[in-house]
Image (cartoon, one colour):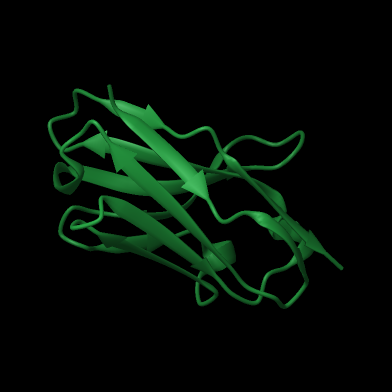
Length: 117
């Protein structure tokens, strides 16, 4: 059974950094486009960053230049390096995996990121 497990969230002061990790199992990781989403209280879930099976990346305008998504297919893991964090980055961050064949779409349980001012 496919599973995504996020880690690395926590409480950090504004201007600080965090690195989120998402470990995948039960899937052919290299054949999945991966993404990080976030959902703040009272708001819809939004895409933060995505990385394709070829390593192409895309970012929300609000995080460009501050966040970096990467993947390690040998470790079945996707990362989100978050620098220069702002209070408005506070949210639950979710990992997502979508197969290139379009027949699966998996979500992790989420990890809380809280940025204090």
